[in-house]
Image (cartoon, rainbow, N blue to C red; front, top):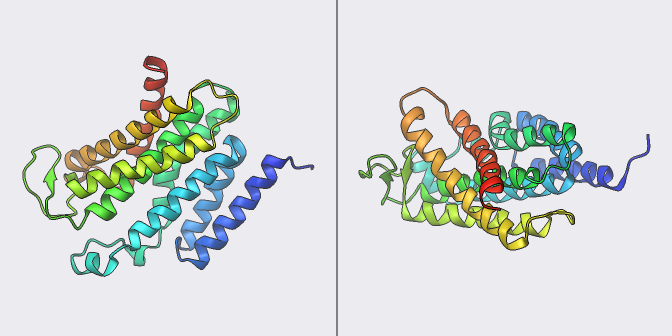
Amino acid sequence: MNLGDDQLISIALIVALLVISRVKDLLDVTGIVAATATGLTVSLLGHWTWLFVLFVFLVTGSLATKWKIEEKRILSLEEANEGLRGWRNVLANGGAVSIVAIYNYFSPGEEWIYLAAMSSISVALSDTLASEIGSLDIRTRSITTLQSVPAGTNGGMSPTGTIAAFFGALIIAIFGVLLSPDNSTLSSESLFVSLTIIGWLGCQVDSLLGALLENRGYLGKHSVNFLATFSGVLMAIIFHNQFL
């Protein structure tokens, strides 16, 4: 079987992802298996650029997870397993873009698909930075009641976390524009603004789900993360149909 340039780049990225994840302790063994499956799905059924942006999320999110980890550990706010991400975390943040990739395989060329793929990753990084950087901000309030709550509370919002969420979405917006398809019908400006707004809004969706459902035991953390990233896909479709 002859592999095209896109397929070769996809395989090279997956190999690089696995090597770096292992060397830098970004993923545990189950996370590596899930990342391999997700990487193959996203890059071969979608495009290698999608995997590259997902890789940006993984590296940036992992750095944020390890940021001030000793302080987080004292307050019991650190990620389990020393910040290593397992299969649940990989699927929670990469499941939505994988679904978009599968859809793209059967219905390629639809205008909203790239925006949806990037939007789900934008939500993922926005939420991750908000959680990891904002978790130490004592100025945290519930998104539903606006009452003061302990730092790190599900559904909590803080000034630091809100700003971090914006920059998380901004990072993915930048890469989303730089790697956008040549035949894209969206202007760079529209794509950039849409990815930034959707990413930040998706983070708020995560907070709402955390306050309303996770705190009451109806959903777990990873289910909330998946639903939030999938909300990015839905918002991308709405944005494309109504505003772009």
